[in-house]
Length: 483
Ligand code: ADP
Ligand code: LRH
Image (tube, rainbow, N blue to C red; front, side, top):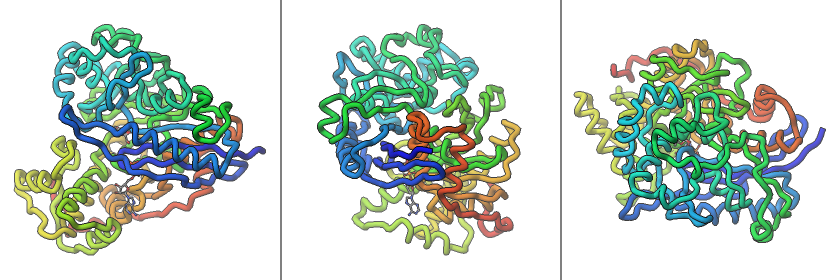
């Protein structure tokens, strides 16, 4: 067989990276080239992504990749879902909004006033999140922005546009907009667009993972030191879609948690579940690579911890995360548990105060020490993960015998153990960089370095990365507080 090297650009809400992926028969290796923080910027009109800084970091990362590997076989780009840039005549009309910006409440009302949520769910199969693209675009429409813009590009598609000049919408990420049919992210739903007054012309054609988006613009190729014939390949450009590609599931009776800023908890299915029960449980049907359905629920994730740490650090101290987690693991007094999914935790700000407020409202003890507070957050996340795994199983009929945890959060040993304990199911943790791996694998397959279905790609991941296993311990009477 062949072997070759591709570059993965992976933008998470917490940090971004550029990685080289070396792929060959029985070989899968990731070499980090650049890692950079993703720090949003608040201006008087709201919370934005610093897209120019991200782009500069991507260009620097690709230059570093080119130095190590001047003959890259392909480049692939993934990022968080739902957000987009608006353009007119190729010019970006302002910094893209961050999905945690609170401007969309009016957009939600406007959309549901035209199409009740139950009707919307039957078409797009998406869980309600106030920042889904459909609500953001309704807000743009009412601000007159869609009279000005001629194109809307989702974040990875915007980066691909800057690298190649092409304008496309990659299918897995398009599936998070709310404007395509569940299970069929092949074209925009004309009926929804008409009813919502979103001009179809702003949305570019949908391409599938594995399609070639284009090749590098001459100027970009010269800037990074690569050939202008280097292809940019569509992959699962929704980061969670790429992560799920690289979950080393070896049997269908497994659940996954893609655990980073968010905890995306669910199972992979051949087709969507659009029942009343799944709508009531707020489960989503997002598009996966190779036409699979990612049936999952968004759990608030390590945002709860990282935003708390940011709050504590505003006092001037510097916090060592692994040290803090170790202190939390050593707490043996009972701690309270709160509902990690309460919407009050979505917006940036003083999360410890909001958690305390939740606990007081529900008559539960507020943790006194920092270590107890962190334990309370991690117990609550583990409980939300366990609940979502059981709900995914009930709604889909999948018997879950193992929970795979991938992403940065798979390094949180306390969270992995408590998830196993609270679910009563073994947790298999790793790989940490599942998203970059899924990005690499789908490119490598598209350019002919490897072949095979998702199962064989996952088998390669399983052979290449040693996971850590956590067996469920007996219910710890000391830690549970009923919810
Ligand atoms: P995203 O893709 O959303 O940016 P990542 O998958 O990179 O997120 O995960 C970031 C999270 O991983 C951090 O918020 C942190 O909680 C966790 N994390 C990173 N490194 C460690 C570590 N050494 N120990 C425990 N948790 C970690
Ligand atoms: C995770 C993620 C998630 C989306 C959210 C906006 O990074 O893509 O799947 O719901 O960000």
